[in-house]
Amino acid sequence: MPIISRFDGLTIKMYFSQSEHDPPHIHVQYAEHAAVVEIKTGNILDGSLPKKQAKRIKEWTNNNKDELLEMWETKEIHKL
Image 1 (cartoon, rainbow, N blue to C red):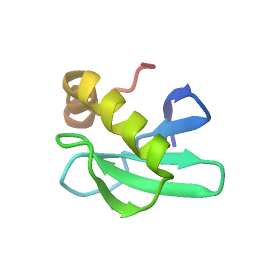
Image 2 (tube, rainbow, N blue to C red):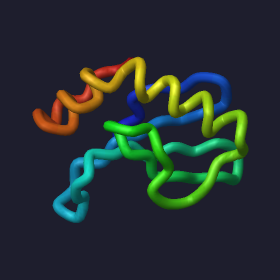
Image 3 (tube, rainbow, N blue to C red):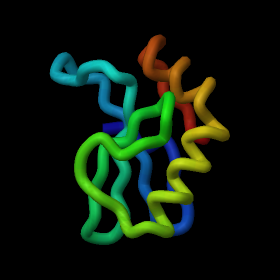
């Protein structure tokens, strides 16, 4: 599974397997926490993150939304 970014202890990945589904989302890991985050809203769809990290990933997702959606649609990964 490709890692698209790492910062502040957060690891962000995007899968491109047949089992992936809409809405467009990323997978985030932080220590023992894991979450699925919707790209368009930055909201956690599944799992959990500590409050500070959830806020940080929401901001990051919002700042990188266009590039993330492009990766989701084209299935071409690049580091952010």
